[in-house]
Every structure is written in C-alpha cells, then in structure tokens.
Image 1 (tube, rainbow, N blue to C red):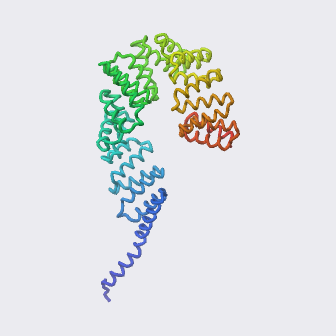
Image 2: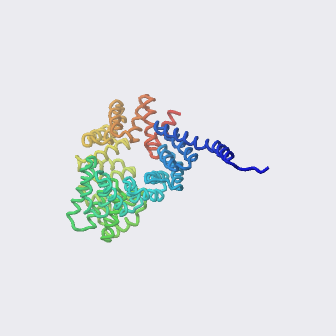
Image 3: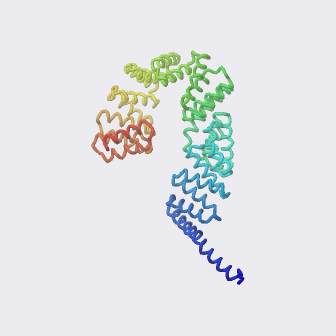
Length: 465
C-alpha cells in the first residue's frame, strides 16, 4: 500500500520538532530574565553568567555576549570579560562601548598593545581618546599622546584633565605651547591650581632666556618636582639634542633615567666630561653615587657642590644624608642644623632634620620633636608633618600626644600606609589590640608590596597569629 506524506504528517513533524527545540530558547529567555534581575540588584557576576547562558541558548541575540563581558569586568573577572567580549567580536555584535570595555580589560591584564587596538576601534568615544592618550604616553609615544588629548578636548571641551595632561606634554616637548592649556585646566578645576602655578612660575623663568635648551631644562625640572619623571626625561633629552654640550641637561637626563628604573651612568659620565665644575652636575653625581651604595664618594661630590654654593641648604641636607649613611651621625646632625639655619622658613629643612633625628634617635627631645612641631606650623596641610610629630612623641613616650598627631595624619591621608602603620604600632603599645589590628591591616592593604606593608604584615603575623 502506497504511503503519502500529507499535511497531517507535516503538522505532526512540526509539532515534534517544536517540542524538541522549544526548551532551549525558552530556557534562554528565562536566563535573560534572571540576568536582568541580577544586573538590577547589583549582582554583576551572576548577571554576567546568566547573560552567557542566555547568549548560548538564544544565538540570534549575540549582543548578550557584550553585556556579559561588561559585567564580568565590573566583577573583576578580567579573563572572562575578554573571552565574552571577543565572542561578541567573532559574531560581529560588539559596539564602540564594547570595544572600550575590551580595551580596559586588556589593560588590566597588562596587554597594552591589545588595549590600544581595542580603544582605537572604540573611537570617537571620549573615554577611548583619553585612554589612548594615557597609553601612548606610557609607551613613550608623546606626540601620539598629544594628538589623542587634542581629540579628547574636542569631544569634551569642558573637562580639565585633557587640558592639564596636554599642558604637561607640551611642557616636555614644546614649552611655549604649555601655558594656555595649563591655565585653562586651572580655570576648569581649582584643585589643579598648585601644580599649574608651579609650572607657570618655572615656565615664566624659562622664557626669560631665548635658549631653547635652557627652557627645556627648566621646564623638565618643574615636571620632575611634580613627579612627572617620564616627561621630565623627555624634556632633558630634547635639551641635549638642541645643545649636545649642555652638561646640566645630560646630568638631569641621567637622574630622570634613574628615577624611571634605568641606569643613567652614561648620561652622568657625559655631564662630568663636559663640565666637572658644575654645581648641578656634582650634586646629581652625588645622588647617583648614593644609589650605587657609595656614600663616602657621594659625600665628596656633595661637598664640592656645597663649596660652590655654600648658601644652598639642599647641599647641606645632601651632606647630612651621605654622612649618616657612612655612620658619621655627629657630622650629619651638624649638616642638618646648618640647613635649618640657612632656610628657617623652608619646611623641607625642618622635615629633613626631624626625619634624621627620629631615624637615628639623635637628640629627639631637643631636636627631633621641636623640628616636627615647627614643621606642623610651616606645612599644616601635609600629613607627613603630623606623622613625624606623632613619631617623635611616641619615641618620647607621650602616647596621648602621639595618638592625636597620628590620627590627624591618618585623617588627612586615609589611603596612606605609613601613618596607618604608625598608629597601629601605637595601639600595640597601649594594648588596644582591636585598633592595632585594624590599622595594621589597612597599612598592609594600602602598601602590599612596599616596606610599610611588609612591616605591617610581619607585625600582624607576630601579634595576631
């Protein structure tokens, strides 16, 4: 008997297939509903996993991979974020915002070149421009960084950061273009006033000379004072190109390289060969020798600088530091006192005297504590002033006064490990174990790879096993 595949058979087949296939998309939509719920409640990790499950079950909604990737990064799951976002890339379902997030994820993984590629695809988003500018600067591509900050300003003209960063880059490359950007940044954000004014002062001094190499060195020193050593190094490098016989530029370039973790001896040697009688060259050579573990030789170099400029307290403090390293504490004490005598209104001289006195327990009562108290008066807006005063009172066993000072330091610098460590030590001394544990734990958290964090971890292991 001949059988026919009729309409009724087709309907039965469709019904069977629907029953077989329906659970997958139905479960996918349930996953999607759960993902939205978790996302709204702030449970980003679970929301991300739910979006992944939904994306796998609803293949015609590939945009869910991007959602999963963004939430994974918010949860700190960097590898998952990269995997999910790349799945969105594979399916051609990633947006500029997704590329931006992928770049951020690559950056957190330490793959900066991948991050740059992703951020370039996120353009013209403003955050992509600023991320690219920051990345290019870290790679030493200062001209590209300038280009991206200019784009960032075009996209967000009312933000201070792009103007400030562009001003810093110009200070290192084209000082005459720096001031307009820096002043605009200052207008947009008054918190930038202090660094902007310090740069403005330096640049105004620099422009009193038509010597472009000199301008770059003065600008570079101002950048160095702000801790912008990569840009300072670029300014000094450009100065040596404009004037290859400029000894001070070579010496500063060597210092910048050391500050950035490089050797710098070639540049220091070049400076010494060009002008061994320069005060700056002698002083920076002394600093180089100190880092090489040669304090006696450093002391000789500093003495030469001090003989050339006997009225500069910087060289007296340098001599004090080198002398202390050689074990000559009496001479070191004298140099620090001389620095204070030369510049009694300069907080740095009192800070150096107090730090020396406390570090070596030299005349804490009559020198260390008064110096720290003087520092509090001269620099009341710096947490280090109160921290030094707190340490001095601690050494003199005035624990009440010590606590007052140290709590002030912690209040002013709530994420700094050093005052937290010192306050933790004080509470160990007073027997307040709960407070000691709290502040030592903070110190360990704030400085996990540094000396303060190491000491805090050691104390926690000893007193709270």
